[in-house]
Length: 139
Image 1 (cartoon, rainbow, N blue to C red):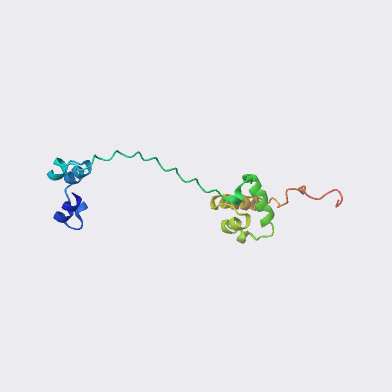
Image 2: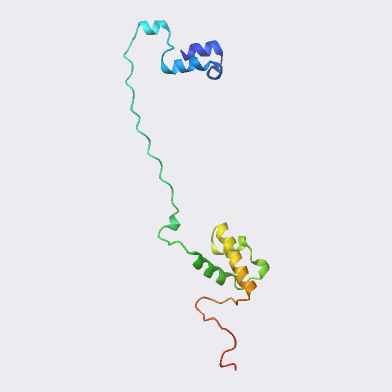
């Protein structure tokens, strides 16, 4: 019957055919009289189509087994990385590429580092004790 509709409506018969006729064609009600009177074969049994399994999400093979770094870990690493950088070089993009973090975390790190530098806190590594002024030896 689709061939008849194509013959009647042309190459774009699916879009030109009235909706009612297309629905009737899909439901099997729009069948020529000759086919209704002389069934040649029993109608095929409806196939049960098993749903296809969804593909598994690919995981990053490098990230397997690595614990996620906390913000404090990232801040410590960025302090050590940027200790020699000038304030003008302290950009989110440069921090992102040096410490290998997301853009959002790079912006947070930049703000934290700039706040530390503006407060006058001296930058120190985590393992070294912070000096709060002259020691007893210097006095």
